Image (cartoon, rainbow, N blue to C red; front, side, top):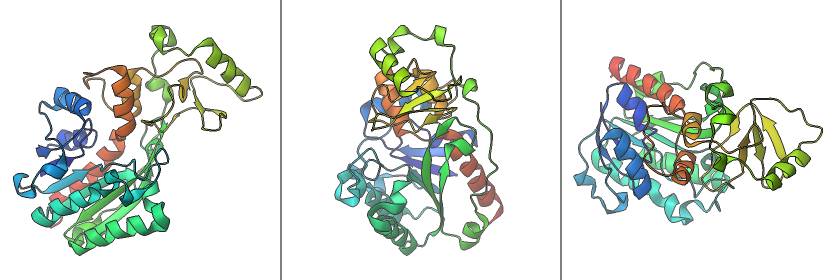
Length: 305
């Protein structure tokens, strides 16, 4: 299938579809640093601000992919939804769908989209897509269930113009085990700049007195300052504090570890600073989750009209 990659970020949604032999005919990403990473890995620079690109400029495609901006609905944002400019980006998707009507769509966002404004925001989105003829399936999925040591819940919406294809699609995926040890590097090999200060380490020790401490682990501090210890990372977040998560309670993740936590292969090129990788992975997707969905969509399109 020919597909377009909207709000492309660093290409986490595109990657599995490329692997399956599909062909990207258009991509769009306004963030310049993300575009650098995208170009380094896919060999093309995405077009910029989608609001300034006429629908007729976008090539014909069979599949629209979009991880549209989530900050307007995220727990890290103010949750203003459609009142936030980023929340109106869904209507850019609607504009393109009205013109092109691709047979298949896949959208991704934070799980809070489902409950935002007492469910009204999500209801508007579904109504708009239904009005365009799309039969929808949607579900909140967790990256932990796809073999990644990261608790990251996202809503996935899959739509088909064909009712038969939609009926054949489901989100019943086998749960895969995860292992934090598979993705972390030996502490002694990590640059000392990523180690927490003595002050932070003392605070962490005080906060974890009496708790079961094990290794490898990720020590997570919430907004209230409470520290919990897990065999996985909590969701990578763009706006989180620098010491939000410490591996083994002593250091921050490396750029490669952050990418691994999202399921990117080690062949994925790091072309920007560590600070940018923190931001980009916080905005990205769990690649194995998208891969499972991509495989199911591909199978259905190949076998059902």
